[in-house]
Image (cartoon, rainbow, N blue to C red; front, side):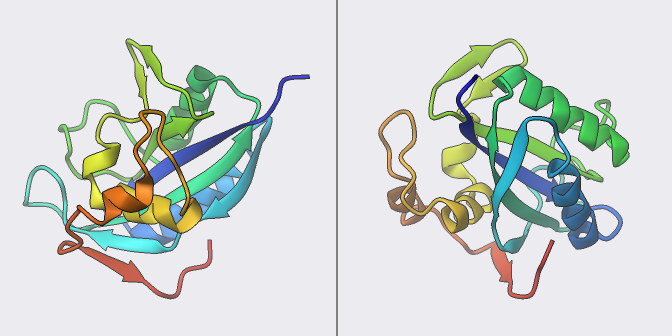
Length: 167
């Protein structure tokens, strides 16, 4: 039997009703094979990264326990995005119906053509760091950095927590 790995997924959306979409995405993740949803962050609103002529994003982080390998987890994420109307031909950092990023998996580094773990932008993005802190306050990244210390160095100016959210 393969041991479960703890993985973290970053969710974002800014088209349609993003909070509803993220709630539905969490429910979809709960149906992934060999994967158990163990925690969900609060919901956050953030300014868009990239083209400014788009709506603000809603963001959250989901912690899962999984027996899936990183690439299989990525395949589940991309299939879920597609079911929610995401197409890969979109503008880089443009508006999206749903974005699911694999942030970390099993506490190890992983490098392939289609996937790099930890996610390359994890340490600089407030819309990732603060929701991740909600579900894993004592997290140490594979490079030895402590998530809570990173949070102390990142601006929250464009990030606002939504108090009432139950996916």
